[in-house]
Image (tube, helix red, strand yellow):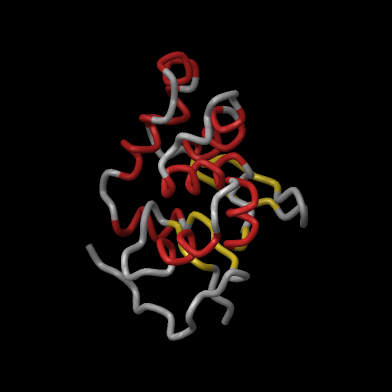
Length: 145
């Protein structure tokens, strides 16, 4: 696995995070297998053509209206699977809960404080987990140039 140089800026409770799908795809060969495992058997059958390959879908940003291309599997997860009741629950392990939260909110950037509030969990352990040396499931800060 290749990993880009870490930032010299230490993340804070207000640092914005998101799922960096590009980073994840470059650093984990099994990322699509994991994402597909989040789909129910019915969804896998219904959306088979869209999720089997690397089909791209137009995705309008709900805030800016800018249209970008996203992976079809990501699109199904964000617009359908993550919106199902029970996709995210209080018993979900921390990293998985954060990942699912980003899917549920359309991968809109969120601060540690926002994540903590939504998940009803304390912010310091979330910050410690996401700002450590290891990147979990592409959960990375948005670094401003």
